[in-house]
Image (spheres, rainbow, N blue to C red):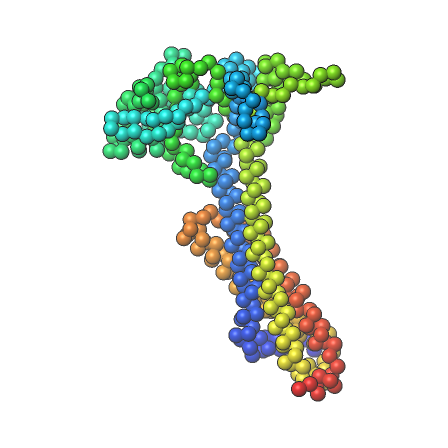
Length: 412
């Protein structure tokens, strides 16, 4: 018996029980659609996080004062005063792997203009901070080196602060706003960036010369941190190592020797690459988890195929006996039922792929979740459902092929 005839017999058997065949394939349909949709959501979230981190500066390196946290509490207050302007200058002059660097000091408080006020943070930085954080001054201008040297009371507002202080839409350039009781003249407005993947408003900030924040607001001589940017993302690790060496040298920290234990760092260095790697591993884990949960329905669908094929073998025992009595071999019977099982799973897989792609776009359209449909997820789902049809259809088909023709004909 050739495969063309076996295929026709399998098609007739499936259409003879349309509803039962559809319900059998439904498990595969739901399984494949679920796997594709869940993987699309997982991969979409991963790409969204990567894009947001890239917007913040994928090669950004953040240096903060103090040793590592112990039990969630710093050892003493002086550990927060370990970064000085000398450290900033040393890194700027001696580090070969950075393209931009800025001191940072921050303070939070109330911004006031007329009858309007809003809570926000002021960041004391220099001009390089725009490059590092990929910020752009949309209106007005950036403060200059002269403003930094003179600790001028000038600032650049983020769009959220502008909207809250100037709800009538008036131009804030040239206006004087107050941070608590300290007046600042607005010289620029940052281009809007929106929210990042962690729900933080990237426009709720104010930039000012770091000298102004240190002298006029915080009254301190130490830095809150140093932010810099590696020349390329690949050089981030080398930049981090060199910065560590420079700071340990300038802070006179002892390295390990045979007779002495090395001093702990009195600073922390974190890179966006580190954050990106951590977020990627988290999203990958969640994607795998979602895929495994959805994949369970594929197994359930396969069990459904096995169950129905067992029923089909039982119902068609006399038919099997007649076919074998007129010359059909066991391998022909095996192929007949195996083709039937594969047809059910492959048809279900095709419908599941279409449904999964449609469901993914529906999730993006209705829930506005980021999605990314990967070709490999479609191929993998389809391959798994085909394997499921073969695996779960083989045993019932083998049972049919091993029936004794005489006993099969006598079966009632």
